[in-house]
Length: 309
Image (cartoon, rainbow, N blue to C red; front, side):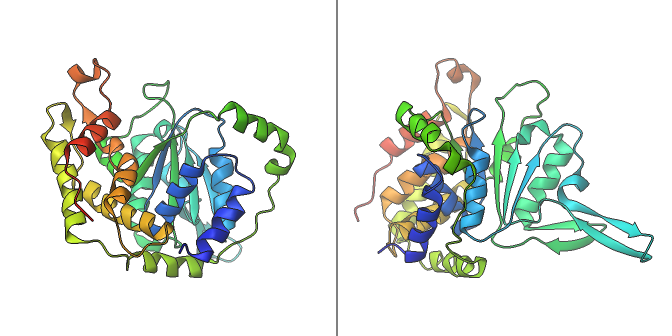
């Protein structure tokens, strides 16, 4: 049975979001596993709106960081300043101090600014003037990218992309969905989202997900998929241990969202398309044959034997 709390969150979000059910599920998965999401796709498809509505539904704070080439690490994490009136040093927290942080056009920032953000994602804390500050929990970064090779971009390295637990490609809505959007735009544009859960309740859900059982044969299925991808001649860079870890964590969250206290192979298959593609680099000679990271994941899932459950 699906948690009533999860049902309330989905209901609160779905009132103001048309379509994007898969993205909503992935955002819930990311929040329940405290992972981060990399979104790739065209501008103007509602990514910012979805992030705001999601933050409101979970009762969390929301911030948006527009990445630009002149952005400094202090603009993201914050800084210490001297207040002449009080004659004291005070902390000015940056926009990274929020439960849901939307980072627009991540690859427009310089590597130095990218590194400051990614350190916060990895450590769940930032260091300002040598002093560590913990970030609020739950903590979720939703980052978007503009197309590779665009003017003024600094592409993420393989190591930086690996910091994202999940990735998803967002496309334009269907004709029916776009009709529904324009027909209810006055309602959608100014959402009055009902808070469905408190952050403390959400932290309890996060702990509950950790109790979902994963059988040894399912764990080995995860490792078999990763091993098969590493063996392919088409692959120049394959998923590391983080790929295995997030397949494990993500499949537990999907099982929880389906109302189960155990993981089945289908959970692994479903989350694989969000965990693995951004961790795979295809050799140039195979790219010419239109072989994509997603096609590599397809091939691995076809070839690896599914355990009986």
